Image (tube, rainbow, N blue to C red; front, side, top):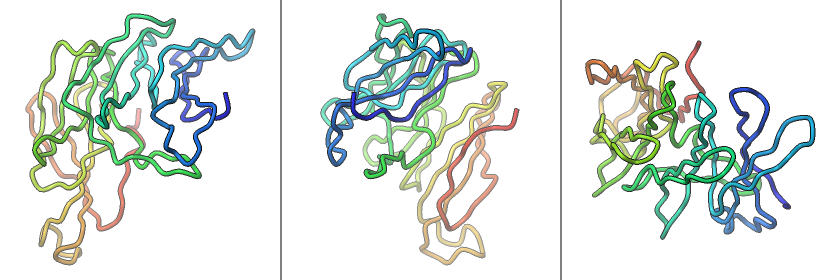
Length: 219
């Protein structure tokens, strides 16, 4: 293994998941990465879980790992057991991502998707017919639900489930003339939204004319 990227520690702190490739060249092989786990301490046992995946993320209960896989240039979320096997395709409509940079290999957004606190569902953004929307799906793909449309957005990303599961925060970016007096007309507006799961209502809580990324919720 020549290059190991984007690690994520297990909830119990005993293992780390990551993606790896022998030679990433100038980024053209990043879709060919393998998904692996490695124990922390002890024998450093390593398990190869899946081929052709990136961005592994543990479920909060540690029972599964989610990752992204590209088929015909369309990214979707897949899940698998941390010991291997029981691979499931969770999404089928495509996951909207802003991509990644090369040299260094950095994600251009902090989250492409996120788990619900109870580890049963995943929230993600999708683009169909030039329309961006936010969806939640069960980890095995059996139930897919649209929860928000963002009609004026050019980008939609960083979906983050709150620790209690009651809200989802996300970021949209687009040209929204006159939406904020301090932002010149026609300039890209970055908006942080919070959606209340009980009411289905989304509220804009912050706007700016520069890049905004979400790192996480407070406890």
